Length: 379
Image (cartoon, rainbow, N blue to C red; front, side, top):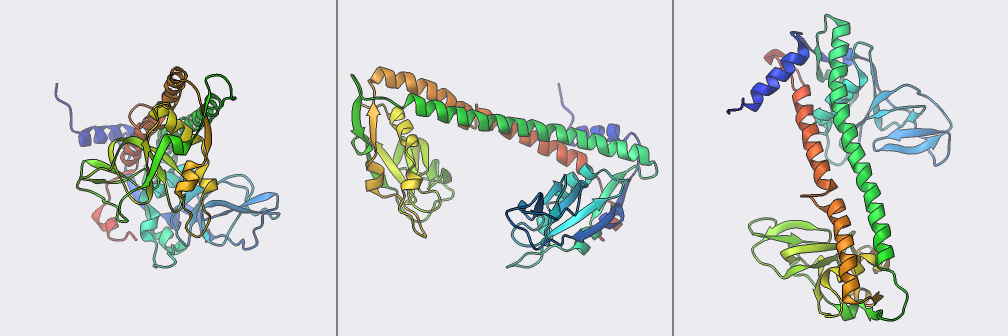
């Protein structure tokens, strides 16, 4: 059975949603009661009301200025163009633009459309990127059925409902993942904690592993079949490998002390530490879970460039149970690990699929054809 091209299915979906309604493009400035800058310059850590800035809540204040839902757009700096909605009672900093919609357009519809436009592309300047209120006012926004306000609002609301459904599902899955990670960490700590006694052996991690810094300061980005591990996971690919099925620990920089499992044959740069398993009394995967217990980041030599030395890696003393007990513990923790970290089977995979589904429908629902004359006037 043949399938219709995706573009045809998209057109059919939108035609059904619009139900013959025309689409008119209007400047954002004409769809808003105002587009202005916040005024707050005196935020602090105390106060009854939050102060919103370019990254969300950036402080507190005792002065309540707004109590209506409004769209905020970061105006200046690295976050210029970031879009979010402020709710409740609050004030707004002077590095943020306020977009107050008219009743003829649904606030959340405008929000989704502005997010989809990726406003950071309009930021001007190198050292201090800037987006102006004038730029926002000139942006063209599609409004379905403008001659029938009730129908227009209903279509906008339906678009918002669909996108909200995917957003909420992704948020629920993310919250579930966070809860499962906390549960995993709790059970890992409990399962790997023993009191000294019969069958329990005391060892240092230097007895379990030989540690060796990786190779090369340049990260190979492409051209090989082996993944490249740096200080925090895969950063490229290479045609050579220097480690296989073993942990990799961040050695230097912001990720010093982070532990990852290097699956299969892989290459480790100087930013990572190769952990070569050598003890017959400790299963390789059990030894990996012992590494996860160590807070190497807190133990790193603090400086402008934190690093984890061989001495720090070898020093921790651990209690090791018999092999059969190690196997039982590994089986339990592997199931948790798959659920919380696997990009092919676990919750991260499910979140990725839902995000792709959301992106598909967002593009479908917010992609209206523009007349050529209007295209020429867009910022």
